Image (cartoon, rainbow, N blue to C red; front, top):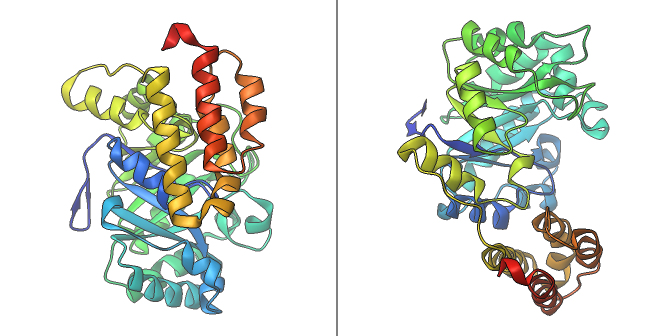
Length: 324
């Protein structure tokens, strides 16, 4: 897939997830072969007021490239200004969030609320495209609700406004993350525009990625929640799609080694005190499907130091000797 001057392999990209896809997680996913990634969404208004927490979301390292920074808001001028400021962090792409279903975002006119006002969404996209020399992409949903499914019309407007590519999550805002994703709407968007389309939703294993590609004919697949606790999914997808080879799920010792590497990176970038609070959810995700998972998830929620994480990993291995 071509995105500006970027050539992206047709494997799998990492979706933006607030509070999850920070630098540490992105680097872990990149190490397993993520083709492309989008960072945590940052408030354009927060950048306008020079909020340090907002700026911290935009940091980019060479180890993560190619990468987009994602902005949200509902004012064209403010978003254009934020995109210009984002250039200081040297991203490869600017992504506009027009799909977030969270009440605190959509309730203030941003995220998926823009699907109710495609004219404003088009003005935002046009303003950002004119403001920066980078490719500008737009991520959005099937529609606001079942009575307002407008992804195809919305996609055409974003293309006309200068978007370089589109990412479509096949659910309405009303549906949040249930029921199963609608592949038909992603396929319809792909047929309706001439720019690249990235499919998003319910890609949790190699087969679901293949299904997304085959059914929708999209140019790239984006994995979100399927990568939580399973960053090796990117390697499995890449190896199968490029070589036809199946990569087994890592052994339990390998899984625990990845978890600890992930936790070390978070602590390195954010400090042990803050980092250990933030990795509790990640540790719980790494426990999916193993014997004693409920107890270990509870233990994950009590992590305070890196030594605690090491003890958790040792306890997991001791409880599952047949997998070691």
